[in-house]
Image (tube, rainbow, N blue to C red; front, side, top):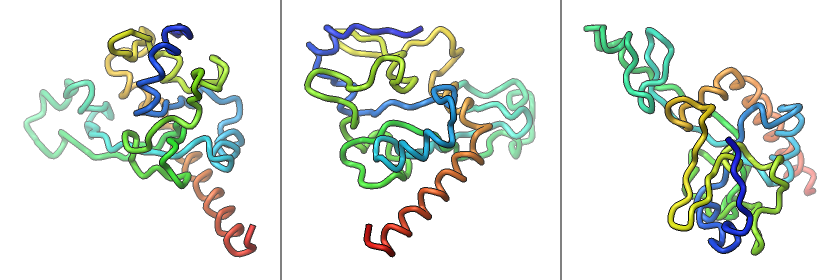
Length: 185
């Protein structure tokens, strides 16, 4: 459920945008590979990751949604958790110097898209998290009726099938940066 209240956001000054740049979903892109390379090359996006606990039996995420039925019924603790790194794209924070955020979602600083008059991006081009952010004069919060359970788990789950694409994009950007360093451009 998208929310927008530009006037409230202007009065607030973008407090949420000062701390956590928005996370994209793969569905935010018409051509994920092309748009990711462009966003990473231009410095408006970063690749970030979260380490999640997955149930080895069911493949369901455990830490955000609680242990799944398979884990709960199993007496063998080896099935309970399997750490899995999930890479995803998000807007870059102004304190981040590289395309690789290295798990720094909350240390990147103010979102690169925040201006004194609000977000520079048209509403439809904003990251998923930004479109579902419900403005509130006291405390903005993420609210999405389409994502059952945790919106974080929902987001990471959506990125799981795209891990190979994200890794290929990361390789391409790394090669571009090496070439720029070697040639001096």
